[in-house]
Image (cartoon, rainbow, N blue to C red; front, side):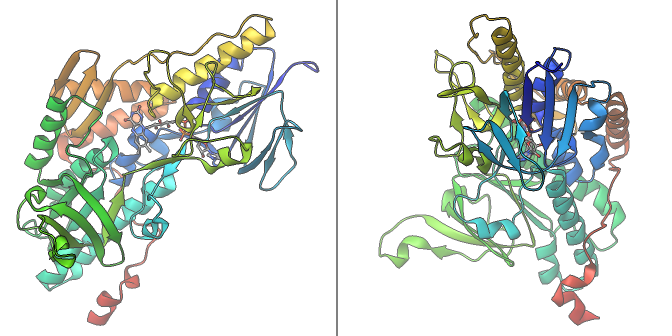
Length: 456
Ligand SMILES: Cc1cc2nc3c(=O)[nH]c(=O)nc-3n(C[C@H](O)[C@H](O)[C@H](O)COP(=O)(O)OP(=O)(O)OC[C@H]3O[C@@H](n4cnc5c(N)ncnc54)[C@H](O)[C@@H]3O)c2cc1C
């Protein structure tokens, strides 16, 4: 193997993992580097955040996945720099790793559109650690509601605001509604369902706006039936320890019972007439699912990036001017000749991984590199138990059948037989009983809320 090519892959997510899976039987040496020690199935993260699944159900150690492939070397660590001239990557700690080919699949993080201070009060959902943070915030809210005798104050703890009406926001809002009205009602003596508010805030005129209008309207109706208030055309203007401030047209306020509302006519301040209002919602639980920005690692390549930090790749997915470096998955911006872009979803990253393996094989065989074309297999989003929407080319459907299809596809793409089996068993149990498997608080302490200490 002395003369074999050394391929370094950064990121054990969908794109990086797929590249290694495709090349691991070829005569190459591969080093897979990730800041975590696992591959994470992000599409089911919201179920960890809402206590339905345990972290181990949706993650698999990278070393375990490649334990039989002696030419695959797994390294855990943060990659901080790419030296294109010396053809090596630098880790936060440890020796530089040289490469013949470098595949960057570092994914993305949430973006607060320049308001990074909001993150402390409104965590996003990308990693297992994020999911556990959100899980504990939700469970702690119920614990606080249970101990709060004053209904005025208790309302704050029974108010949940999810920002962003994309698939993640919709899934979170729907599941919080389900567990609040079913599971938590049984677990907590004093939780008052009349006080419960679950609010989904969307900046555009409809949620799930990459789907057909009929499907997104159906999803909004389903959410509303489940008790979620959907605020459309609504922009968050501040998030702090007390709650969230939202600018919204009066006609888009779902009704006049939004928690702790405090209206201020915006335009009055500058003497204009407008129906735009600012609503302040008192809550300790805000979850952010509104924006994405590509991994900052791409900046170290020192090449022009798009506004959202993604790198616009060449037709073979390589970095312009550097045929030995590829950027794939959520971090890449790729456009087919017909103008169709690879969306930032798992099938996009997987198709990129497949393609990079084809390109490297073509190079090794002395053949011309193939060009990438994204193939749209359709998309699905779930809204709650037995409710989902699906759009597969011109075929659009919703309800129970869409939910079954969503469940089958998600279980199929999970890594590891044990995970598939456990997730199916948990879902079956939840379907029958509404009781999620992992309602644990392990990191937070009750006494961090000063108001609660005062009562003791
Ligand atoms: C909550 C949520 C729900 C989603 N739901 C769906 C869905 O239902 N269907 C769907 O198709 N898609 C869904 N997606 C999108 C999908 O998960 C992503 O498109 C996909 O994960 C992108 O794959 P990737 O390989 O580009 O990046 P990722 O899967 O994000 O992997 C990136 C990897 O790189 C590692 N990494 C990052 N930076 C560094 C560094 N500097 N050094 C070392 N390691 C690093 C990270 O630890 C991570 O393991 C969802 C995403 C989220 C967050």
